[in-house]
Length: 84
Image (cartoon, rainbow, N blue to C red; front, side):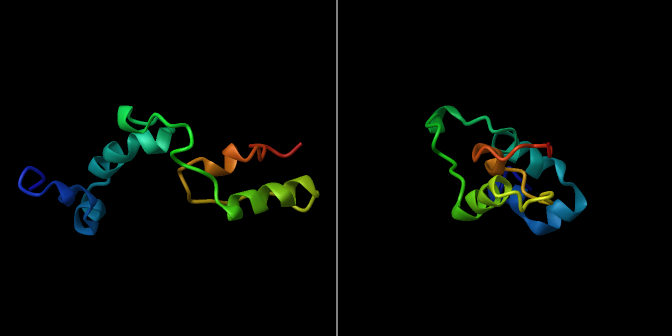
């Protein structure tokens, strides 16, 4: 199916059956390793929401962060991975 339609790897039906093809496709992004075409370190940038989390930490208002994101952008703001 994927040879006939390369976008099949991102279909919801395939993902529900087997997440591995999608995760393999997204591995460089998940691990923060950019492809040769996107060597620019600023290819993925934290948003204002990511920096808001950092500001809350700096002001002592943040206890923990629960996230389902796998992009690691919250860490690019300097938000510690563990509370101190």
